[in-house]
Amino acid sequence: MAKAHVLVVPMPCQGHVTPLMELSHRLVDHGLEVTFVNTEVDHAMVVAALRASGGEAALCGGIRLASIPDGLAGDEDRKDIVKLVDAYTRHMPGHLECLIAELEAAGRPRVKCLVGDVNMGWSFEVARKFGIRVVSFWPAATACFAFMLKIPELIEDGLIDDKAEGPGAPRRGVLRVALRVESTMEGVRNGVPFLCWPYFADQFLDRNYITDVWRTGLAVSPGAGGVVTREELRSKVERVAGDGEIRERARLFRDAARRGVGEGGASYENFRKFVDLLRE
Image (cartoon, rainbow, N blue to C red):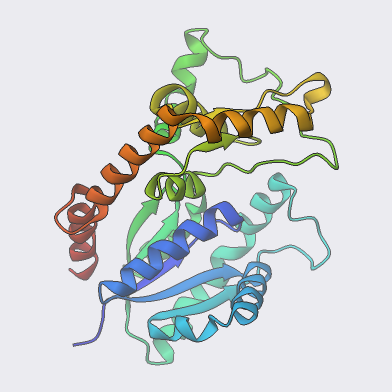
């Protein structure tokens, strides 16, 4: 019997490609076949990184890398998120249709399900044209998604103002500690205390969980102009490294996380049910 074939479509940003690639590897571990669809630019970077690390051959075990254009010229700024989203929303649907047709024409197993980033909703419409089931994937924290759904209500209640300015970006030459949900969860699984320096989007929510809810780390405090000084960074590193209570809580969260993803754990069982649904 042919393996169930899943098409995975991430948003073309590192913080979205990485968790969906991780998901794809887990799907392959459970006996599914995956075609991972990047933009041409991201595809080239992924392949180059794999070749540099000697890991390209590992993808032959079940993940097929594919690419389609994002609608921008080669020299256009893809860090301009508004321009990027506008371009791929208009140009990628047609290319994805062609790719699905090409996969079928080449004799690949018919795609049973498309797992798409929630920010790539246009891909769901393409899937429905082919009678393919869809799964919407949110790569950030669940709490962040819940918060976003509540934004209109929070504005109406006067609790937040979307017009308020956010924190400025750090200046050049100043060390910045990145904080994404995938690195946060990796740290939790390994029992690592955190030093947080959020920069964008859900990273601020991740910081709040780490410092205020889990209490497994500290956050740096920017000074004038949003700059975090070396002295501030050194002080917080020393405090985190020397705090026995933080390290003990980090260990407790590590053990809880490992129980959850281990065989018989809640996360393990939920993922197994998800795989069974993809096979149907």
